[in-house]
Image (cartoon, rainbow, N blue to C red; front, top):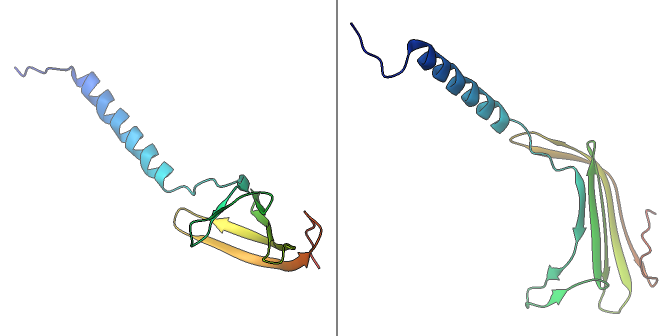
Length: 118
């Protein structure tokens, strides 16, 4: 007669449980990461080590439902504000990011906070 440290029912249950956990782990690792949200540009370090912070530099990225917008404002050397705006759609999988750019706008204005799409 065989002696088991665990009953056969418990061994079967453990094997099935481990299989289910592995199945969920594999399927979860194959899913695309979620990047939806709003991201704020808070500072930039220049090559000389200088940290630039608002109001001299500001930016905002928004990822929502496959759409992306990017707005960036900085003070140039003359003290005027320059801006860059992008509008695009994106697709993100577990292994690849692709983007279709629809609009790019770069302007220089002397008024703080003006972003133009013309």
